[in-house]
Every structure is written in C-alpha cells, then in structure tokens.
Amino acid sequence: MAPSRKPGIAIDLTVEAGDWPAKRSLRALVRKAVDAALDEIGASLDATCEVGVVFTDDAHIQALNAGWRGKDKPTNVLSFPAFQLSPGDRLPPMLGDIVLATPTVSREAELEGKPLDHHISHLVIHGLLHLLGHDHEDEGEADRMEAMERATLARLAIPDPYA
Image 1 (cartoon, rainbow, N blue to C red):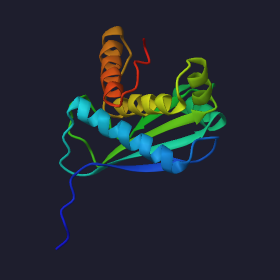
Image 2 (cartoon, rainbow, N blue to C red):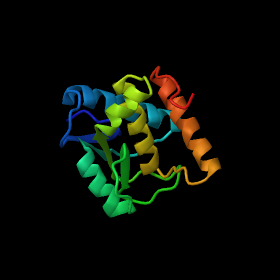
Image 3 (cartoon, rainbow, N blue to C red):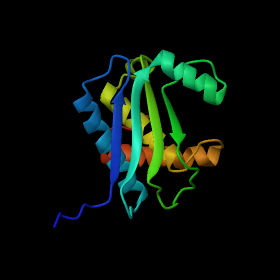
Image 4 (tube, one colour):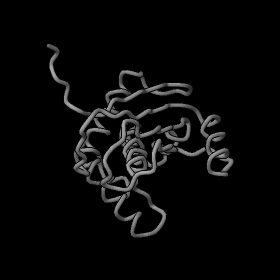
C-alpha cells in the first residue's frame, strides 16, 4: 500500500525566457512563497491543486499584458486564474498561472535596493493572492492584500516591501 500523500499545491514551474537564477533556486523560492502564503491565509486543502509559474522576458509579458489587459507595456507579474474565486473559497484542482518577467523584475529589485530573491518571492505571493480571489481595485482591498503580503513575507524573514 502506497503511503498517503498530504494535500498541497503542486507547482508547475517553467523558465521560458530571460536571465533568471537557476531553475532549482527558483523552484525553492516559489515553494517557500506559496507555502507561506497558504499558511498565512489559513487555506485548507482537501486535495492537491496545481499552480503554474512561468518565468519569461519583457517581450512575452508585454504581449500578454496587451492581449489580456489592453496595456501594451511590460509589467512585473500577471496572474491568470483558472477559476474565479473569492477569498476563502474551496480551492479547485487548478488555481491558474503566475507569469513574471525579467528584466523588469531585476530592474525593480535593483532600483528598490532589495535582493532579487526577495522581490521574486513578493511577486509570487502577490500573484498567488490574485489567483485566490484577492484584489487591489479599491483602497480597502489594496490595504487588505498588502497586509497579507507583508505578513507572508515576514514569515520568510523578508522586509516589508511597502515600507
């Protein structure tokens, strides 16, 4: 009899383009960020679900941003939920995809004087919260989402990116 597997989030990680750290390092950063975010919001998993994380370049994210959001410019992170969730909803088998782009992410980290791995972790957490139904369309939502990001990053000993 095979041992039972604890429910969790499976991460499908792809390094598509761009000058990123080694895939092994990225996988460890993403795993820690996802686990910390789920712990922080108290998500309970009845079954394993999956999230895709794509590391790409500015050209690809610009095309995605133009096609999906009507903004023809690169951005640091985009989230593509597989299902529309509200905070606290039961998690589906597939959450969706988070896409990050370099050199935007690298440039932001340098301009803000923070380690690249801290910025990547923050953006993964931000993207995951979007997949889980959180948003920042109004001031109240933004304050709640930023508070969750800060608390999750504190679990990882990463300083407050909004300070």
